[in-house]
Length: 564
Image (cartoon, rainbow, N blue to C red):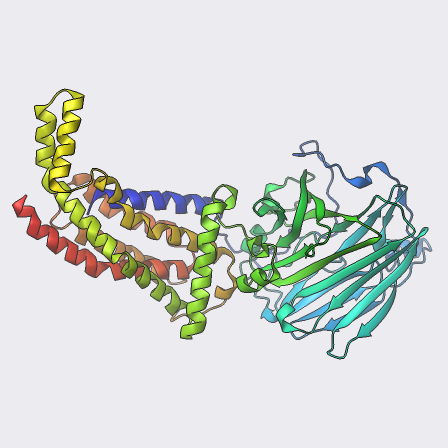
């Protein structure tokens, strides 16, 4: 096999190895320790190591004392403090169950009906932690700051003929009147979306609403450590690519300001996302301040995000999405919300994300049209990639054979002419007479390089594609996690070695290529052994599909070699 093939594999190996270092496989921990890092009542402290100084509109005003707060704690009971009791309201749809509180006029939990929680907690997937609402509001005016989370609201509930419900919360906050409504539709085409509208009277501009996003999400996977490692805040600048900040990259107390305008801001784990999205032709979010939360273990499980939106003409509006990271559903939401997982990190996102998106669309299309499980779809994709590259492989191999035939003539031209100009002219004449491009050597590695973007994109796809979650195939109980028997990684390595062995037959002796032919299958097996079994399945299918052509090309090389 040509050394260029091994060079291509080496480049892909580096890419995958770097990816694995950045997304290391997690070791499961005992169930009694899995939630030890969770803390939803602590408040992060400001650190001098903040990456940017947040310039929040609230920095120049004094807080307005709240008129009421939550149910009293034991300490407050002993002190004789009387607080208003919060009234909770449930709204059910076909896909979700929403729970709202009149204290702060906020959602406090959302249960997703269609997805089971695979962590030790069991049950259904749920957004919201006990005692910590999903949202919190602060109102910033030129004269004061009102923490709406401590304000008791009165509620009005209306229902349309088709079952859509609207909860409207109203309260007097100082000299202002605040109204916040949540519209929940029964239409499955807009599942997991809630429309939020608010009005504030009795204030003068400028007025800002600060919305506090959840500090964490409950783990939903059996590998709770891996789910915690995936916790991140994502946001979409209006004129730039979406970006994501992992909780682990924020030191405790560290604050960073991301300026807008922003189309949306979200918190996500591996497969689920809770986000606030600006509406079309409405006010975008001005900025978001991210802060690292306290840590009780090596893994960061808490952080905070404060989203600022200007209240114009006494009104504000946005949407809440709380649901699965289904690619097609997120695309329908719009505003590039399907980029909530920016594949390829920031420096490779412009290249990797489009490929990953097309790969996902192709896999979903084959799954729906052919009515096959995703395991067979991945096998078909691997075979199709090799079939598409068949003509290019044939053409490249024939160019390679001609290059081998030309080597003696090229060496003779270099030996005959010492002058660089004459030598270059003689070499170009050799290429011209043989009808071979002088760049044939560089293009020879293209067949090996072209499948690599798909392989690289699939690595990111398997990190967060919920469509693969829990999908069984043959002995595999879930193609989104590693093969528990390690059959596929070993089969992938064996097929890769066989492909290399056939390619080296009838090739000119090359000790370096022979050594790499042994090393690469072993190295790739080690790199992929703990990765998603679906990724190993795709790579194995591609290797096996390439064997017939590799055998035919080896035979063709054997026929030409004696003549050379």
